[in-house]
Length: 191
Image 1 (cartoon, rainbow, N blue to C red):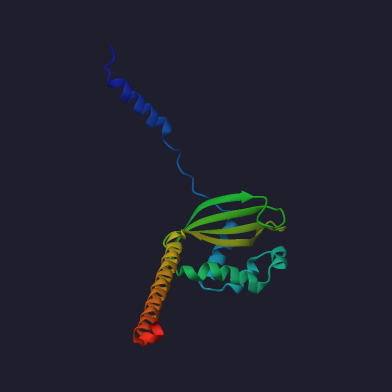
Image 2: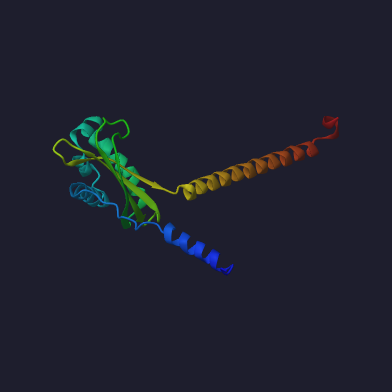
């Protein structure tokens, strides 16, 4: 006869044995893509936003001007501060990206810690070009915007409260002035 405690232990051991996740495989990038992304990060980390335009393929350069491209990268990047760490976490392939022509796109997602934003994800999108290499198609940073949103809401509430207190004070002062004027009128004028 099997001990009643043995069956649950065996079931737990079997579940643990078969439920172990497979060893996580590191995301990989083709060598040319890795080199291009490294070059892009070096330029953007040094605030050379206009120079990153040269990493884009000609089809993208026809769609966006150098100043527009630079301002897009700058707006995402400057508010983050210095890079503290950056780790590739995911690589995805796609046949389309935004409003660009169909092609082979490679999306590399990095977990990045900036000096002004502890947790962020940087996404670099590359497009395969005719000669077999890659060109830079896009870049964005995503991060938790709740603290920023809460700060904006809090500041807005403070402004509303300040305005309400100011209006209440002005109304009270005007009421006091009118009351004094009424009290100082002779009795004939009051009646």
